[in-house]
Image 1 (tube, rainbow, N blue to C red):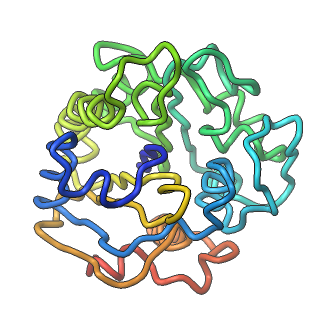
Image 2 (cartoon, rainbow, N blue to C red):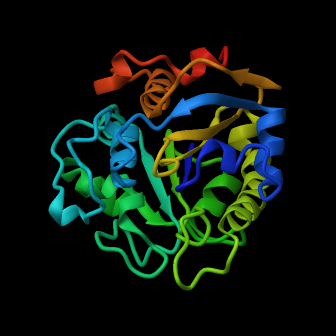
Length: 264
C-alpha cells in the first residue's frame, strides 16, 4: 500500500510538532532520511505520481487532466492486471469510479491510474471512492482481509496536506490526524496482521527549492530502522515491483530499492 501526501519537505514534517503521529511511525518502524522525489523542483506534482507508478515522468511538467496526457507507456497498474492480480486506487472524495476531472476536494492529478489509457478499463473498476473509516471500499477491504495486491491511496485535498479553499487551516496537522485515524485500522486488519501488507507513506514533492521529502515505511517485521542512502520515487517503484515479482520499469531498473536501503 502506497499513501501519498503532498507538498512538504523533509524538515516540514520530520521533527515538526504538527505531525506527532508521523514522527512516531518513523521512529517505531522505518524512515528514509535522504529521499528526493527524483524530478525537477519547478515541475508540479503530477510528474511525481507518474514517476512513482511507471518509472518515468513521461516529460510531464504540469498538472493537467488525463485528456491532456493520454499515457500509453507501461505502468505498475497494467503490470499487475496483466499478471492476473488486482489493484485499487482508493481515492478520497472521488465523485465516482475513475474520475477523469477534478471536482471539489478530489484532484485527479493525485490519481495516477486515470492517466494510463491502456489501463482505463481496469480504472473504471478499480479506481474507486475510498469511503470513510466507518464504511466504504477501503474500510470494507481492510476488515475483510481483501486488500488487493497493490493499493494506492489518494487522500483528498484536505487530508493530503495540499489544501483547498474549503479546507480548514493547518494542513500538516490535518494530514497527520487523517493518518492517525486510518493507520490503526489498517494495521489491525487481517492483511497486515498476517504479514501480507507493507505500507509506504511518502510525499509527491517538497518545496520550490528542494524535493527532499519524508518517507515512512510500516511493516510488521520492521522496527526502528533508518535508511540514510539516497533514494527517490524510483526506489519505491523498484521495491513495489520486487515485492510483486514484476519486471522493473524505467528508472526502477537502476535505482536503489527502498527495501534494500531499509534492510528488508
